[in-house]
Image 1 (tube, rainbow, N blue to C red):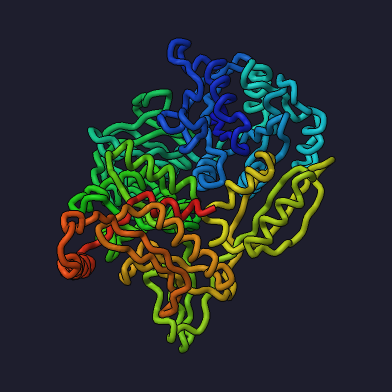
Image 2 (cartoon, helix red, strand yellow; image 1 turned 180 degrees about the vertical axis):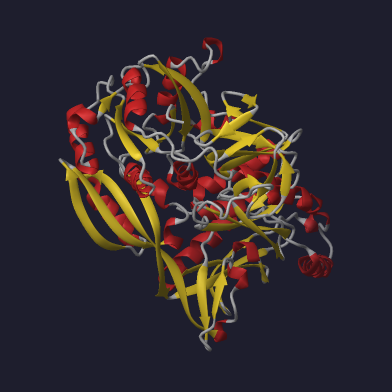
Length: 595
């Protein structure tokens, strides 16, 4: 065990985690030259296309140091705030972390939040300054920031470059010297922490785990602690670029188990695996339950695909434990699921993965957050969907979730960022200078205001230099009202939103204008109305498609024309009663991008 090192790589998005991981794998000859490519650990097409890591990936390396052979288990993690749950799970399976900071960007919001997460788990932190070969690098200034953040010595910071391979050997030596070996007793009852799982259509569910105590052998009868299900360990092994079967794994190691599990609900991330014959007393403390921030309805386009969508979401949930879903139905869209996401990028990625990996065409409704609604008798109801709101006469008050947002930016952009946050009903908590011309601004903001387009706006007004991170900060009472959209007097529940009273008029008007552009014209007028309760606050009309029916009535008595027009009018009226208006998917998405 003394020659095992488990570590993960944490950083802000785009600071070069995956590139450093590529160099480490190359240097230790874990990946053959012929298999080497950029972002070698990112195995999803989507990750390569966007240049971001979505899943954390585990891989084992062998490294020779001072004539001893060491086993290094590396877990590469995502950097985007929407995938922070992946990071928290990786951290739980490690004893140390490489904290990577871009030498041209410096310390950013996600760097700090991931670092705190690692410190909570008492991980040994090795600071690495990446991209030191770039012309825009400011190594001395960034070193000052790291020293201030970590309180470490300057000589402990490793200068590296993922592109040229500079400093890679130093990083590997530091991993062996500074990160402690895993603690645990190979002879104690078996305890393995499941930190990830994937679905394989041929082999069932494959669970990735870290052995905390004890030893697991191929063919052992094991029990999953939380679900109480028992299985034979058909195959266990270690994770190289491909899975490599082994006969046994003892305390401190990271590996996988295949035991022919077919149902996705039987494996929970954070569960403990133990022996049936000699079980452990208690489960390992897993990680806290994930709290979704954004909720949206996901509906199949064809009603008969409902069961397929359920199966697809279950398989996706295995691979992405931060996705939550419950069944719901909508008048406009039929049966579907209410899904909880960690943010808008997470929602976009899930939709993309459903399409690519499971060929599911889905309609996603307007995202919203969960509210606490109190009735006149002070009973609390949790509402995830505006359609589930009780009658207005019954409501005493509504509370909405708030977040504490940390924005790190250059001083040049403070004015614009303040204007943006105050426009979103934000309250300034404090601002402090980190170093030179960089400042950290803390704001309390309603989560409902930042769900849709806040991050995009922040990036554009700061020319990409502001970094953003947030955590939940309780509920507060707020003056919220439900805004409904009516088409020809029929309410479209999928377009209903809860909004602040001060925004309602403007939002309703903009929504009607947008829908007027997007709805296809019919043979009758379509009235688009925004309403609060019974009160209509905005209206637009999509004009009917007309043809000149009186063209054939040339000459003769005028009453012939009038008779024909009256007949047309009656027909249009009947058509309006039975004609239904199809709302295209574009209309649901357009509501997100109203500005």
